[in-house]
Image 1 (tube, rainbow, N blue to C red):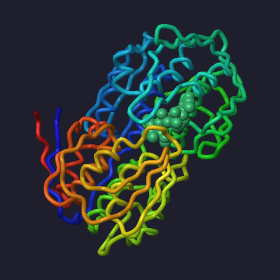
Image 2 (cartoon, protein in one colour):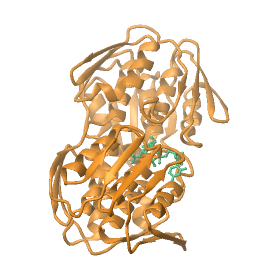
Image 3 (cartoon, rainbow, N blue to C red):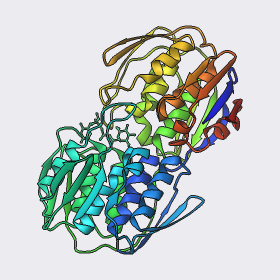
Length: 417
Ligand code: UD1
């Protein structure tokens, strides 16, 4: 176990570069399983979750070479279609191999991912969609077995615009016979990036980024090179880091359009936000005003930015209401922020955050990735020292976060127990 020791109180100033998107990288790596060949993916972030997906691909028989931010995946020798419980437990997103394995081999077996720290996160929509494509599903002894003799295009309606279900079904349908239409599909930018990757390989997908995606099955795919999009959640986290420390930070290498919900909320709170080409500058020289936030599927306010904004609201002027509509258990950071002096009242899925003076340093625990990021932001803004335990959660989705913030003036030390 590693922890961060943070000495709060410094303004962040300077430029920080955003790495490639974790949530675009994971499905794209999984999609490489569709190919009886090799592909090259650039802009790969050095993250624990990416290392787990690499391990999953290797376990299945792929040859993966990962050097700096470039990954070459050769899936020619993939012979296994089963992912062990151990790998599924290490990362929920390992379930993204289900669609491509079904697409290429017409069979797959994965351990049921189960719940996680932020909610129960079932897979019913993934499975219902696969069944519509003609896949037989059996669920026994904690494993999902999927098998089909004939993968046939079909109409699929998702009860919820699930990101993972949309991705799994897109990947499964690429090599199906006929046309698949996914309605009420997720519209996240990572879905568009996956579409771009698949279409480069020879797939025929249209409508990604809207709620109706059409996939016309093809017979074969070919190797490609692709660069993943920048990580909009990492970028949003840095923007809040600038705001919470009263700093002046240029967040570079971003796609500003992907950051609109965050940009708008920061402006509403009174931050100065300047958008130029592929960078966003956030500058704050006064106390921010409280704002209300409701998490929604894209293009709404991202649930993955909710904890970081909660940290910000604890020090704003007035009371902000946060409503979490995506995950039922995404308030683990509330207890930890309270330990730092925050005034937060929970009523079901709603958090009432009464802004106050600066938080004070405390020993807190990161329960999950974004909760951990929120605690780092709170620690940088707090009086005195903060210890954030279980940094391994933060490493799942941020590339050496302490180095990026220390370069902007923060004082964070990683301590190895
Ligand atoms: C992805 C992101 C995650 C983000 C989330 C929502 C990746 C690797 N992870 O997760 O960072 O927080 O989108 O933006 O991209 N649901 C069902 N049945 C299903 C599938 C989902 O009920 O079969 C529910 C979930 O429990 C949740 C909601 O739908 O309440 C959204 O989940 P989903 O969009 O699937 O999230 P993930 O793809 O797991």
